[in-house]
Length: 431
Ligand code: LLP
Image (tube, rainbow, N blue to C red):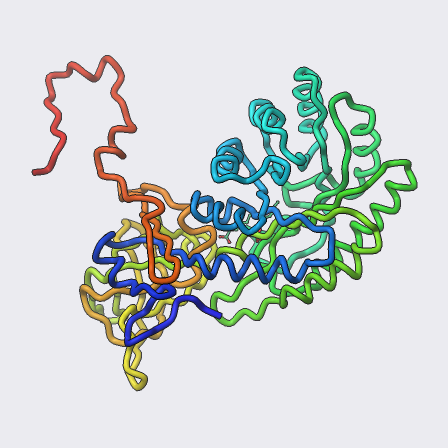
């Protein structure tokens, strides 16, 4: 079910017309639906009820405080990959006892922050990282609860840039090195081995890669137990895909049934790290058409959002549905246009040869499925302002991240002494 639908000829987020928000906030802006977040979380949690699972929302998908808080109020923990995300999770109220710290390159300082916060576990991805964590924990007189991330060497059949479970990917400890890794972990001071973690990729649209990976995990659990290790916790990562266009990702209940079938008999506590599934279709990016430029071979719809606001099409050739905010007539003719942003490179393209009903300068467009890996991947390239974010709940909405002004961005730079007194005067405004 979508929470962004046409009502009375206007696209609404729950009960709020996007055009109304655009008037107050300006464009472009992200809009999140509280009900969509809630529905996605509850569907996931319901599918796993009856299994001993902790749902640790992967903050990297969308780490706005309002989003995290919405999910943690429903019971979600957090999967964080940096000290910054750890701080965001704690600030939003996620209990430390439900925080997993993942990531391939945690620094000693980040480990110390996690230990001091008292998080549930670290997912460790290499032996050098494990030894560093041991030293940091021992120096603080603490024990770090650790799962070793094992790379199962399976193909997730997803985009190469978001595939993580093949041997050639940088992630995890090689499958064949797992026994030696656990033997060393068991002997290291400050390390309390808890279990195994895996994550094979993102935007998976089939269950078979999961079956292959979970089966390898189950085999490894048996082997490690025979070696004398108490494997009591398994972290299955995230990755379940969503529908952007034509994809038909597996139903959550089928994924949960697979987990129960393959992993359930091991009797372990489970950690699940969904990101995109919880937030992807709970957000849109609203943008305004600046110009329609008719070329001889192409027509360009130039909008005020750009690759700095939403980089997924440029980076992964990702498809995002794009709909006019004002509902087109049901018999409106469409024509193929390129929908592009104002940034000075051809990669700044949201859609190529996309059928769109007629649009004119000033019209609003909704770029759909922009709740995950969208605002969080934004930048200020071309000195464009960071995109504001709004959350809707029922008939209410609130700005959950304001658009800063230009001075706030430029003031992040500073001049070295030798450039201050050059005699060149500086101006702050354009007025
Ligand atoms: N756990 C780990 C260890 C991960 O690396 C990731 C995502 C997740 C969980 C959450 O995966 P999800 O459920 O969201 O698929 N920027 C890319 C996606 C990068 C995913 C990185 N890792 C995109 O826009 O498609």
